[in-house]
Amino acid sequence: MDELEHRLRSALTEMAEEVPPSHGAWEEQQRRLALKSRRDRRRPAVMAAVAAAVVALIAIPVVIINQQINAPVEPAGSLPWVANPPESTKLLPPSAEVRYKPEYIPLKGEILLTEPMNIDTVFAAGGKIATLTYAYTVQLDRNYRQMCVARVPEDNPVINGPKQAAYGDPECMPLTVPKVGRYEWGRWQVPSTTSKGLWLYAMSQPADSMMFLRREGGYVNTQTKAAGKDIVLFVAYMGTTIPPKQFSVFDSDHKTLMNGE
Image 1 (cartoon, helix red, strand yellow):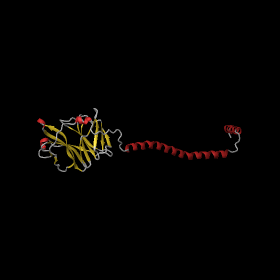
Image 2 (cartoon, one colour):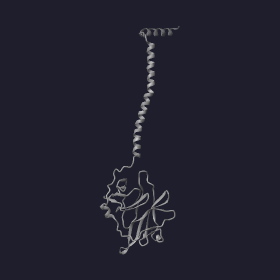
Image 3 (tube, helix red, strand yellow):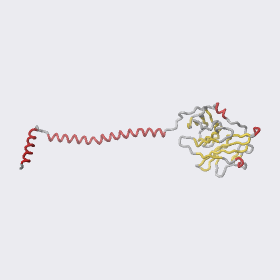
């Protein structure tokens, strides 16, 4: 044994003599190993509980958002239903008694959905009616519908008749099937020389009336309508080219069906 090894053995022996004896070292080691084993078994359960709590915290807002998106349309902010708002009476265009009921000749493939209704009247000199403008809706096939206006002479109000070319072909705008919970198929501001702000609105049944809030102030209701099997065409005279600030759609019991702007 060389000098270095001898010194190392002597130092280790002296250190061992200074440490007090332990009579349960083996048992203590087994106890510590058992505690560590139990902690390791609990850790996955604790982590699983934490993960579940995090998932729950994330899921709660998602559920709330989905409930809000899928909630039914509420009549919050609905306009009041008024039978004859003063503003509506003031904004009505001049009219006269129409002597003849309009006749509609369908074009190839057309189905008339709502009967033509008079929405505008142009007078000639001496107060005699010159032309009438009618609005109506048609279906070209099962998935394609239109809202149309046609101008015809008062003494021969036949839409698509032999005299139609002299007054211009009917003008039409495509309609779009409303989303779930909605009723509007489309709207159209129709050019007019006698009424500033002549608006057409196509709604689904059971729409019965509409009320508008003008941006300039004052309520306006729909003055005329033409009802079909599943669609209703309304006309409103706003007195302005600016779209209304808000509108509400009502059924025959004046219950709000839909609000829009």
